[in-house]
Image (cartoon, one colour):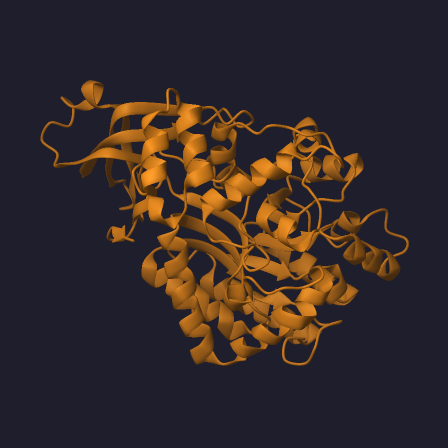
Length: 435
């Protein structure tokens, strides 16, 4: 076992809505193996209260540092590394001009492997220790990504993209073979070490009804795998779905019809939905991945936090690289604050710093069906955490030194922080990873 002495941030397990944080100015975090050999949190609390119980343990003292749960990213695209910062007039032109041409490259195993290495390193450099990611329509891209995650002991869920229509050669797949490949990949990767598989229809327009129904059948056959897709991101996309399924009540209801709404189903964006859709999400245990930097960049719209909280469905934050503009959870949390504040198209809210942080840690873990496993530092949680340097930049050092309460400290980090704040990322099953 090992102990770390620093300031500590974590969350009450039962406080799922408000995201009320627990904070120890001078705390002790004790990690060690559980009965299965996993490195988990054994104890957390004030240094004074715990020091005698763990007097014989080696303690790494980290003055001026804050230890917090590793960040959880609910939605991003590993093959879109090189799409970040590509200009476009909106979602659909952006897909055609940049995304699909880049994803064609992943038919080459060597290209997929080097991209996976960079992608996983970038996650860790930004303090992300759990993620739900898209690969491409090439089965080998999944092998490259999950293989690299396995080497780095990252908790990662990913899947082969299903897209058998309305897509160019090189990324469009065959309906029957895509489902055969998906089932084979589930058997190969799901539940191996810290890995999980996600059934991954890209979005309704890219999948035939036969492919969507086949995905739903796999989801019923393997109820513990994840499902990931997109819904109601963009007005043009919604109009396209309406033309394809004129009898459907809504875009989201198409996924319901084919059996793709359930716990561990995660849909990115969920911007242009109504209260009936929100009730459907809550009733089925389906979660939303909120992607604020992507939505602002592509001009898609604003996630309605007030309506989401009133309806009570699950949600958490996501970078959505490469429509999203940064791997940094600090950038994502700040963008979420901007999105919440917008009050012209919906009710504006001022998201509190602790709630923003919860959305990217314990709240995201809860939405993924991993509450009590990752995203928190309560006893029994896997020991994934970040060491944050509160003096990483001169301006941040000046601002954090004046923080009189926790919300002021966290908001300073959200507004002024970036990858430079992440001094160290610690993964439960791996050696510590300085960044």
